[in-house]
Every structure is written in structure tokens, then in C-alpha cells.
Length: 237
Image 1 (cartoon, rainbow, N blue to C red):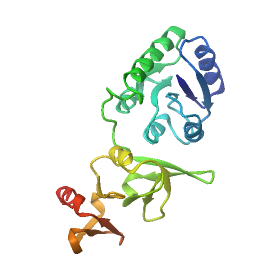
Image 2: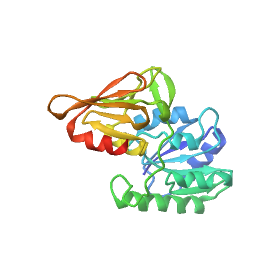
Image 3: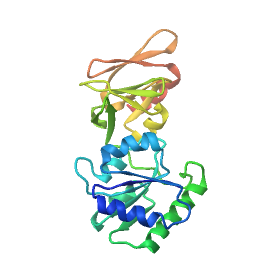
């Protein structure tokens, strides 16, 4: 397994790394000191799972779990606080490891990770549907921007990225359109093979030649709507 430790406390990271060195099946371990750094490490290191603290500055472990890019690594929360357990399992956490813990407790968490990873290559075969995302984290030129899902009017594909159209800009996220729409929940619907729209923003559905059309949004945007998706869009309105 490839594991990424995410914790803002250096001693906590050191302890976990030391215990992991004594466990079988751990192929590689990297560290991140906060959630923002973790996003960069995820992109480059491509871990199978995060060992994720919850109370961290700027971006909590819960917020990071809600913003993971697809395909998302599995998550084991490692925290000193019991009160976040219910939220943690909303994100299909594999385990909730309470500090202080020992090698035996860590071994049980790793066994659960291994079992999930063996179920299917992406480790998600038996997973419950994750909770819809409330925000996305977009890194551009060394700056990480928080984009609230409620502010996204529509989404379109751009090569290996998606463009998130909001009233204040159009940041790009490395993600597939289908994967992202699935995580965003019922508030979004595909309207074109290269586009999806936030249902609350739709103001008009206009039919053009040959059954294709476009959607007029409250913010003034005009979004293509192909005839194969038109019935789905109307059913959501």
C-alpha cells in the first residue's frame, strides 16, 4: 500500500511513520503537514489511502475528505477527538483511529484498508455512495482556491480538466465530468456530452434546430443542451 500521512504535528507524523515501518504490506509512505500540501502530494504520489488528522489549520481533515479528486484515495482518520466520528463515516472512512493508539490498533486499520483494496482495483467495490461535495479545492499557480458547490453555475470539459463556471471566475480542476457530477449529487444534471448544469440556476430551456437547444441561466450564461439529455434536464425542473 502507498500511504500518505496528513497531520500538522511533526511528532504525530513521526510516530505514525515509525509504526508503519513495522507493518507488512506498506510499500511507500509520504507526509503532508496540512490539507493544502496533501492535495499536491495526492496528485504526485497517488496514494492508495490517507492517514488523515482532522483538526488542522486552514483546511480540516473533514474538509479535505469532502474535496478529494477522483479517483479518491481511501481514508483512515487519525485524531484525538471522538466527536467527529459520525461526520468521518459520512465520507466512507475505512477506520477511525483515536490517539493515542498502538501498533496493534494500527495493524487492524491497515487490515481493513487491505481488504477494501483487494475487493476491486480502485478499492471501492463495496463502498456506500459518498456524501455530496459541498466545496472543491482548486490549485492554480501555487494558490489553492475554495470553490463552493452552490456557486457553480455550470461545468464543461477541457481535455483532462473540467471548467467550473461561477459568477467570479472559471477555475479548472483535473477531473472527469462524469466523475465530478456523480460526486456533486442531484443538484447537477448532464445537459451535453461536454457539459453539466446546476439545476437551481436554470431559467429557460430553449429548443433549437433538430431538437438540440440551450439553457439560459440566471447569471446570463447560455449552456448547450443536446437532445439526448434534454428529457433528463426537464425531468429535474
